[in-house]
Length: 371
Image (cartoon, rainbow, N blue to C red):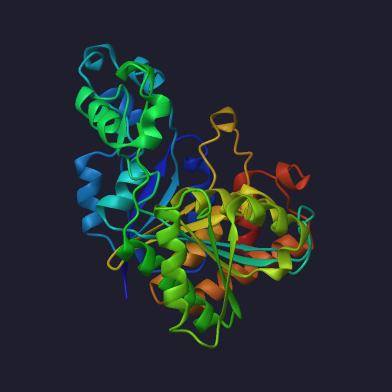
């Protein structure tokens, strides 16, 4: 079967790690047509649109997508970097990956973090963590006010006792970001975590939250987790506050396996988990929906390294392994992971983060030779 893969390198080192990944996919003889898609900072600056309609159309007709990395900057910096004819037009930069997740309902952000033997950066051998992050709601929902509209400010002053502390501020002197969670959104990400644990033999799912303080949204998440857990009597469920789990992961990382969290907390925990197994150079990620999935490294575009072919491409190569699994090419995925693990174990080819001097492409080529 031939697949249609949207190829979205993005910005900075995203281009380089995708090159290394393509070397590995070609070595596997993966039968696919790769179609380049425009996305990222370059297109924001010259078009005022970081996620052009042509790329949206491409994704709509693709089997899956591989995505490199993008640059994001604060609102004023983004405005300043637009070409002169687009400045002052009221254009607002929004992260294309966040828009992509919402537009295509890629509600599961799946981030496995495994300690491969021989990696000098492993915190401890045997760590095998999988983070399920809700990908379309929460604090990343994109509902924000700055400055705060007068009608919103007035409504809060008239109807919210907790808001009294802020009521003295003029609408232009504060900003609001809404944290929005739905019962359906909570349930489907929690159920996805339990299904994964059931399929792959993990004995426990840990729900991460802050329900003791953020009572409405995080309380709904925790209540939903307890309810869903009753449908999986063979799997233990525990829960932890997000601040506490950061401590416990550092102390006892092998006590945890599958973890599930709302959007922001899942983002934080997955980066911590990646560092336990070597850093973001090993942090792969899948944005998964019912009809489309987009796979990427969880690191950013690292502008200071752009063009140097210095960064570790393993996160992106492992993201390609996730793509193969999602497409039903499990044997190819197994071979790609095994080749990656073999190169890590040998230790002859190491990028700078691993204490070596190998380039991005040299790492990709070493893995391809194992294939």
